Length: 342
Ligand SMILES: Nc1ncnc2c1ncn2[C@@H]1O[C@H](COP(=O)(O)OP(=O)(O)OP(=O)(O)O)[C@@H](O)[C@H]1O
Ligand SMILES: [Mg+2]
View 1 (cartoon, rainbow, N blue to C red):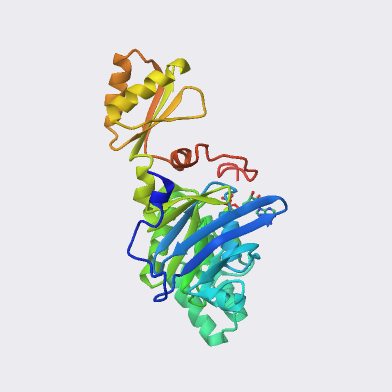
View 2 (cartoon, rainbow, N blue to C red; view 1 turned 120 degrees about the horizontal axis):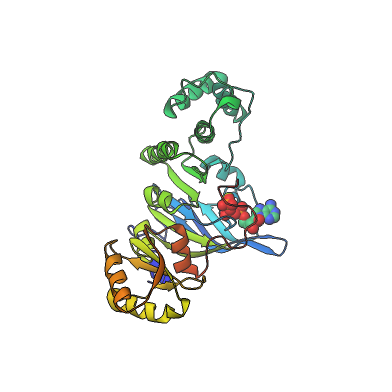
């Protein structure tokens, strides 16, 4: 499937000409740092009431894009509207419409959770009694009642993320930006965060989130844009993206890299589709509609005398989606490091 075929596919008709405003409409967004185009001409349409995922590896330009849309960074070229309001022309209005949570929680360590929420409310100009009420409501909504009196310094990573998200909801903005809401969280806490995010949408919010994880986009997002080196390389529903790499991925390392062409031919014959030859010598990525087709491929390879030094069958990862879409691995030229060494 081509990239253009992936675009503008999922969901109902977007009302392009008047009618309901899109939650986010960006055209040709560009941000340049020195010589480096961190965001290099991105178009984005986010419909009201959806969870839209921006998927990309370290350094792809996800945070930079969100910061431009949130008026925290100047837009160098292109334009963006939020609920029909021009971002560059009306920064004050945009800040009322968008709740932003940081990639790293931005709260005062020495204050308690309740004090932090109260303080943020007051800073937004909310009167003291109402600020108290809002703090109580948000603590309950995010399951932080028991921890309400503890200083943030004693909070776990998951509690910090929830508090950070709670703080961004004080003004009840209709659009929420979440920058990698679950990076670094354990699986159970991630699941809780996903439920929380789904709850926001049930309450009528629109969510634009960034993630490095295909499974997160898969679990949460109605539609996903994949970005790489500041450009959008694909867009569609999670299912559409995954079908570009199949439901499972068979990875083969050939004992003799010279047998690559023969192996490609056999896979093509058995599955009727081409495997992806990885840049690494003798490694093939084979997209499978069903995991059990792996056996057919392996049997055919053995019958043809192609020997294999390692085999794995897994769900397609972001790496495979990337490899399929861009022809290169996700690690790229990034300097910020992987999740493990953060
Ligand atoms: N203030 C800045 N000055 C110079 N370069 C920057 C600045 N902010 C970001 N960059 C560069 O722009 C590129 C995109 O960075 P960005 O933070 O948007 O990536 P990201 O997709 O959010 O990555 P991650 O997953 O690691 O958070 C990177 O190459 C980064 O080094
Ligand atoms: Mg980022």
